[in-house]
Length: 137
Image (cartoon, rainbow, N blue to C red; front, top):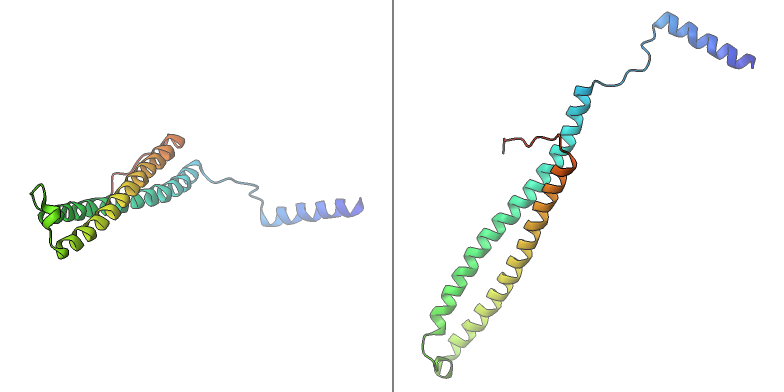
């Protein structure tokens, strides 16, 4: 008991000599700034992923359209074209079919990813209603 009393007296003495500011929380402005920085980093990551997926989708869509056009040229327009088609054209058709299938599969995956990223962005904005989207970028 005496030790607690002595410790308390020592702490009071030190506080009296050095000054005691007591506990002080950060200002609300600084708290809001910290919160905004956290949300900004999350939104920036979502926006970067969304932009990258949309760019990939745009480029891939153009390439798939190009392959479809090239495949149409080698396919011909006769009803019995496939009976008389040269072996090289058959080989190109097989290659184009594989490229088109892979491209369309990836486009489907990208569409789903883009929808998910947009949902995540909407979810973040709905969970932080006081957050204002910055116009820069």
